[in-house]
Image (tube, rainbow, N blue to C red; front, side, top):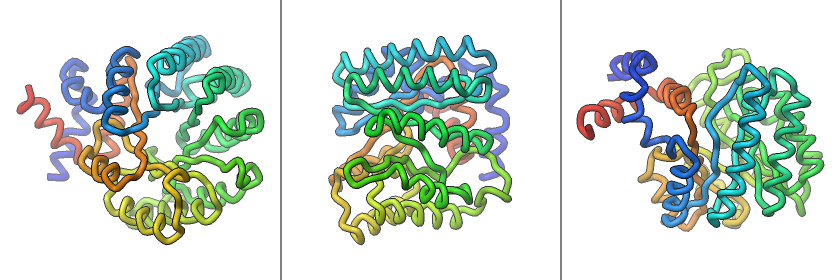
Length: 305
């Protein structure tokens, strides 16, 4: 079955996008902002918070970054106008991080400043290893100016993550705790810098999470892995962490049953809610990360229609 799943994952990017959309729409909150707002409202009604993300990354021309900035400013105005319980996530490479880091900073700063007008929050997504130092530098600059309104993503599979947490403790205080999303990590990296084995990655995920709890850091626990969810429950109980000092996070459309069970336990849940016309690259990457999703593709294409 795993071989078949991997085969489908390899073939999918070669299929017509209209066919791929039949599967992808389960995991994408639409191709327009209006569709994403409708999804966000429904997720709020179910008791979830959201983080809205415009799909796109690794642009090649700075003019593309300017268009993305304008769209993010529109996203913030629209989300706030509709009283959505949510914040914002963005990828620095869609603002030209690898082209002109200073221009990238200025554009993202403008977006964070707009969110601050509504007392809201922007999450800086972490990308592949060539971006990590640049994105930590970007985060530091933004947090210095907007201490309560910006957070960062950390990836547990990187060897450097725990040392990075320690190195950034100078930005943390009891009155202004640092805010991270901790996830496993999605990019293909060398075994020289990243853990590769499932058990090893899980071990370091929980080690990082425990380190955050011990130091009063606010974690967004981003996982669909039941073992990690159970491990998080144990750490929450061990350190008697109040409900307002952490949250669980999941991708839109993924493991809804597990998501519901976490909500039923009284924990807070935030759903990463991506939308946009760059959905195809996002969907094919998600599949490569988790070939088991191929089974859902078969159901979507041949059962649901």
